[in-house]
Every structure is written in structure tokens, then in C-alpha cells.
Length: 112
Length: 116
Image (spheres, rainbow over the protein chains, first blue to last red):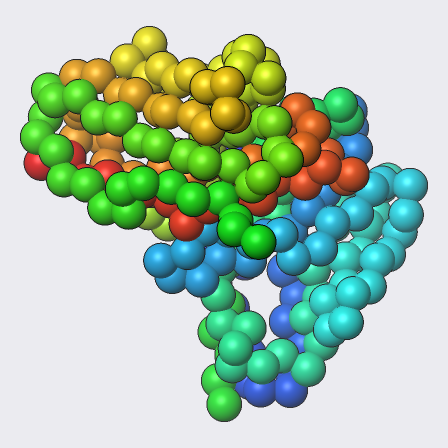
């Protein structure tokens, strides 16, 4: 069963706009929250990750915002580009090397 | 540097047959995990191996089995294939067991299995 609820299922954004994808988790024992990007025909690639002791992490155009009290975290893609068009997955994992539990994915389309 | 490599890239099998999928981890990585990704869904955990020992198993039937070799490569075996086994099978490697902030999972491009 999916323990990470991801929304929206699909998202269309104009070039230069901001893309926002949200995830909600249930188990507070998890302490590792990565985002993966997947292009058609490829495996998921790690994009950015955060731990719950940090409220925000930024890497280039990609930012994770983490709200521990609400058990939610989100991915913000600033200045979205057509090359960002892909499927994005949030995931949750525990300490000392456990499995990752993935959300169901968001298909992002950035129109030129 | 070579990433995680998987073979074959595509495979077509008939119901009831057996399949073996292979994975070579990133050099230096001792942990291999297997995930199943059904079209339109997120990857689902199947197995995790570290130093040739099974460290975790997901909610999959006993028809699914795996092993890790001394060189840290791994095989995923599926017996008595069902139509519902059609999916992208992903192998991922990491330095430490499983996935964590300091030892993230790196995925291969998967094996696309079609069961007819």
C-alpha cells in the first residue's frame, strides 16, 4: 500500500513558471525524503533530498520545503524549462538503510 | 564512471515461464535493491541485499527470489510468470544497506518485462 500521497497526478506549466508538487506522509519514523526524476525509458534519478530537521533545501532551481508538523513536503521547480518535462516521484525512507516507499508520481509537462 | 547496469533491457515471456534479470551495481557499492514499477505507478520495493545477505523483502509472492554474488552483482528470478508481472524491473545500488541521506539509491534503467 502507498504510504506517501502525492499530488497532483499531472501538471502543465508554461516555460519560466513555477512547478509545485506536494507529498504527504504518515509514518513519523521516516527521516529521509528524496525526490526522483524519471524520463521515459530511463530509471529514476535522484534530484534532491531532505531530512526532517531542515525546513528547506535548495539546489539550483529545485527546492524542497518540509513541514514536519503537517507531515508534508513539496518540490518547487523555479523557472521551469521544457527539459524539466518528466515524471517526478517523492519518496520516504528510514534511518540505517531501509527501503524507499514512493508516491505515485506526477507527470510534469512544461510548454515552450 | 559506469552507473547501475541491467540486462536485458527488454524481455517478452509467456505465462508460466521463468525469467532471470541481472544487475551490476556501481563500483564500490555493496548493496543492491530491486523494485517493480508498473506503468503509471511509483516503484515498489521487492528485495534488498547487502554483502550477499537478504536485508529486506517487500510484499511479493514466493515466486520472486533474488541473490547477490561475491562481486556484488545480483539476479532477480521470477517463476510461473503471470500477466500481472508485466512491469519495469529496476535495480538500484548504494554504498550502505538500503537508502539513506548519506547513501542514496542509484537506479539503473530497468528491464522491461512483458508477459503474454
